[in-house]
Image (cartoon, rainbow, N blue to C red; front, side, top):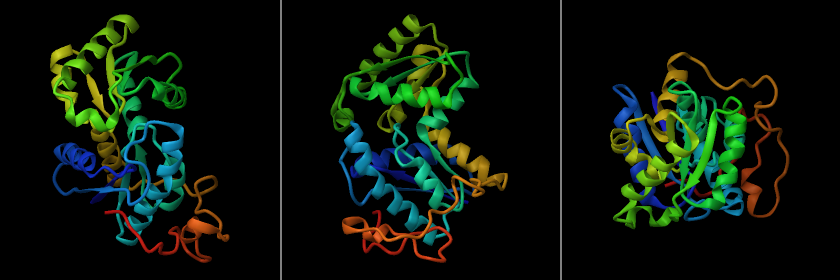
Length: 258
């Protein structure tokens, strides 16, 4: 089985951490490859960033389809381009926010999200309303650490633990969800420290993809997630047009994910 994790930002160091976290849980017989987007923002911390990260994500998925990848993880907590990626991929595509929130609901009655910047909290609330039962998300709390500073902050674990501990007390939640792929490698240590389950969406999404592929399940193409209809695309996006008669993938764009 081959699972491709797509980092929709262009920071290779984050991709390496994502790949290590996924490989740690993937298990035997699963080849995990993480790719860095070939275009877009260095980090995703705004709606503008998120919108401009989607073409690179889709390019990485289209390239994976040419390589017969079995399934994909969208490795950004905003789950950018998730639905569009499902229209391109033959196998299942799972977002890390989606996976983390579903996993959290299996582990407790309520969860709190700990994310990076306050400005991203609204997106987390939107996703919680979509993915979880009413009232399951008890709060979204920011550490106020920019994504590109995560690997440069020597006090990162302490800062995240402090916010998470306060969230548990304030929200009355049972589970912490880490709201950024760049926080994924803190999950086990934080769980030991806080005494509650701490869910890393990278690991959860990897295992959800593995489970779906193992069961022989893929995204339904009956209606909404059928391949996009062929039509011309103009300007810088011309290469993303779907060819007539193509099952899924756009035409070659002349650049690929690294």
